[in-house]
Length: 224
Image (cartoon, one colour):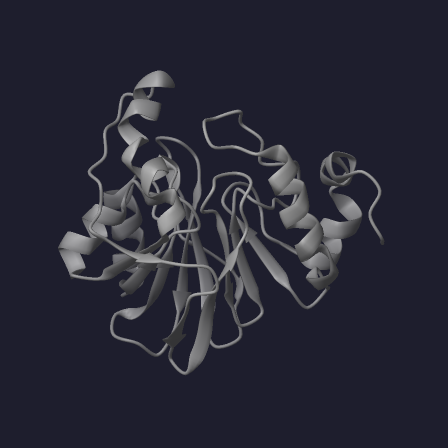
């Protein structure tokens, strides 16, 4: 079910959670063809598409926080169905290409098609209805993980959760790099900043700073 979970500053944010392997796909309404953009299409591409279609929405573009299958698995579906460009950091090309291997290793009976991707670099920016969407480099969970900044919203993938820490011991994970990344984001986690994670519920930045005790334990001592 598509659920409205916030507003990024110029439109609603809708969440659809996949069922094959639970992860959050987000649709940001904007004054663009189709009505907005899609962040992190999960494995249930047709179900996500059906939920959005029921709202009269379709993606103008697709943006991925990182290359794991539960965040890019549906990208090819939307790319082919709507001829929409798919953006992913180039450092996660290998991660995306390993999707079916990881699905087999995790014994998930699902296979995906690799999308035709537009590769981007650190701090890549593009215009969304007169607002800037920026790829903030956030290596650690994967080499090419990014936080997608759009207005007051951060779409954080598996880099930053409202509860817990995105650790999975999959190839490419670097815990020290993840600590460094989150410490760099820490000063910008304010009450005005909304965090939309790849798993679990959204929360404002202040709530993440003060309420995610597993995260602060992982980081060690951090300034309040």
